[in-house]
Amino acid sequence: MPTITVIKRRADFLAAARSDFKYSTPTVAVQARRRAETEPSASPIRIGFTATRHLGGAVARNRAKRRLRAAAAHAVMVLGQPGCDYVFLGRDGTIMRAFDDLIRDMKHALKRLADKMSEPEPQTPGT
Image (tube, rainbow, N blue to C red; front, side):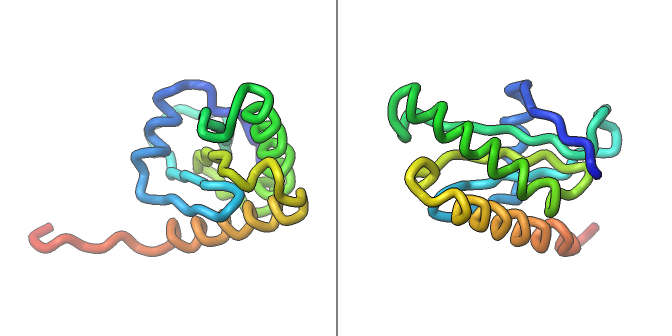
């Protein structure tokens, strides 16, 4: 079973946001990045959670993050790739959608990201 830790540093959230690997569903947006070999890490998989004020006040944002954490506990254990960081962003549907649907959306996003990340990088001319 993979070890999962939580992303806490802002720089790690920003690195995931700059990555090319993003996927959105009505309930969750996921940003992913493959960590470089040179980056020290005690954990094969790291996850982070974000809920902006677009979702509402502190109560709504905290509820969204709690739901994302609970759904990620189901989805990342199965579909998370070692050596990757995942940032889950709450969307409008995060709070109201049925929990099983939230898990299904998260698993779908992780599958699509895994497909994108496994594709070979395009060769640029002249390199």
